[in-house]
Image (cartoon, rainbow, N blue to C red):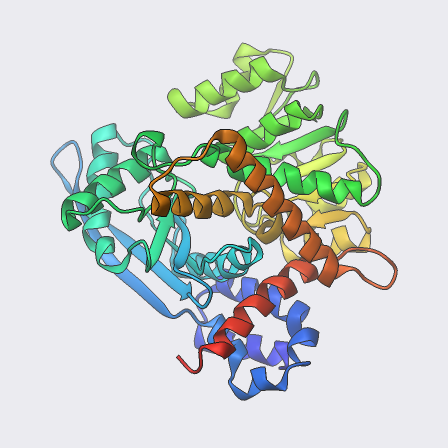
Length: 445
């Protein structure tokens, strides 16, 4: 395989999907050496088959707003690869959603799910509909309209969606209810469900907790403890909230949180009471992070900016893709950050990753460090299959074990001659090899 040539060919075939090309171009060079040790892969054109999704489902979603006006959005499901298990990946409701973004996320999801050691393939879906500013009734009607088409393409042994940006427990509940009405079946077809109807304990916390568990494993390779470290966190949603919570539990000090309008910096740190305020603000009142400074006047709010120029020890980007550029990465290194663990999907641009790795700081890509969410989704699938609910401790113990296994695989494939661990290469090679061997064993399908 010539990684550069494969990427150029994909650019020609998919010229209007820059995010997808970005994902492919970041992964292929890291697996090229290992891939070329297996000439049988090239004979079966494995790399092209792995880059291009199994299928792309695209549909119109028509719904009625509270004023009686008919609205139209686009709906998508990218079923990327099911070599090791049913398609699995979130549904995103956000105005930025398009085909290229979802293909990039589905491609990433395939390797992330492989890393978990659970039997899950890769997928992603969503719509350019945004729940922000919509009434409860409008969100319900949209979710039902979306599921009116999606239900034909999913199932507990076919494709099991979950939540993502803009899709929390409320939206999953509405979609699950509509799926049940349309099929007359109560199945574990969505994860992130309410505890009362098949959801798993620790699922809301899983991505944030898992990111911090992975972070502690990275720090341990250098004999460093998390306790006492100052942490920059972006985002104020589910992942950011629970990453902050786990940091507090382990003695670290969250200093920032953000949303799409800007970020807050609290020089005194965000303690338990302050985090509870943020959770109430974002989850119940659905307010904006700038309201934090009205409650805690010693904090500062920076409109239209991101928190990466503040001084701290750790950075946890937990908001969205492409939120750390080269200048911001350089600022993080200059200001003494020793580790970056991604809670979001691909938040660091390629030039940022290069700066982190050139500086030899600990850097974990999202497919490794934020795999806790999909891991507990997989555990929810297992509980649904068993018709059982596990205790919070059982699920959390599984989560810790999975994150530790992912870290060990990254170390195995990513340790360089000088001892530096390239977690990007380690995660990509470990995830790729499992999927590639499964595809080879199953023939040309």
